[in-house]
Image 1 (cartoon, rainbow, N blue to C red):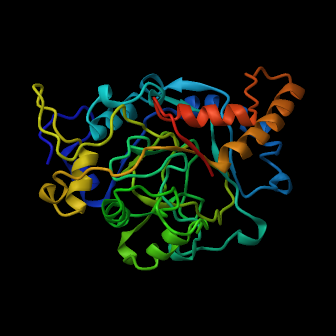
Image 2: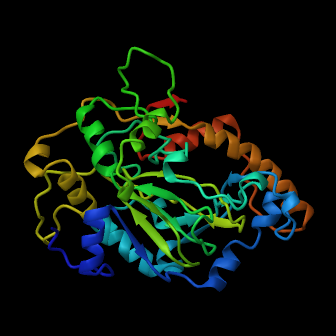
Length: 349
């Protein structure tokens, strides 16, 4: 266990993270702050919050218009993030901000009132659709879920499977050459994309006790190990659910051989969780990647580029000030390169 002092995390929260791979930080920002940050959501969606007949999309991953500093908006969440990854100095500058790329889950008329078991869901995955994955990948060092609406059970909250860090970690350990965002080894003889089959197959083997529904109140922030299996859920309540998933990226890859420096900072809690789930530090000692770190242009960015044009039009028609960030294909490619510092190679998904 890390002997470093923690700014926010209590011993029980640290133990919970080491056991289950996630921790919930309650009340990190106010309801008023949330309302202000999400004030243009319905205009951007082109929907009426009081008329469900206008809710024509079940889930929307919205593009980005604005950013804010996490340390100012949600200081306790920021301190907890730093507690988990080993300190602010390890985090990239962009990861110190959150965007208004809201993820809105409105459910469907046919799903209203129905409850779904987690193994019925077909959207299981780990985050990081923008890079080739290795066990030590710095691009997605922590999964963050700020809650901008209250989320009740069966209300569209993210489902997670706490066996993810061990199962996905072993796959990455066994494939140091790197794997695609859908976990296909980069040297696989087939070019066919399996989609989410790899993840959906894994969860069928997981114990019922390993599934957890991420519920909570406005202002709660959920922090999860980067290899946590998770899935969007069906919003049976049809109460609007709004979150974001801002990635935390590190300046350098995870280091499972890390020795304590002069200040006493050794392995982070995220690194220690990975080490624990894979069988201890001796097993990981000397592990190195055997492939090239590459960015991937996800289809998500192209979809969001199209939605950005629609959102700009709606905001313009309402007389709302906005920053025009409509993206061309060339800009999408440049964005993918910028997702990792000094990235030279870009693969097109």
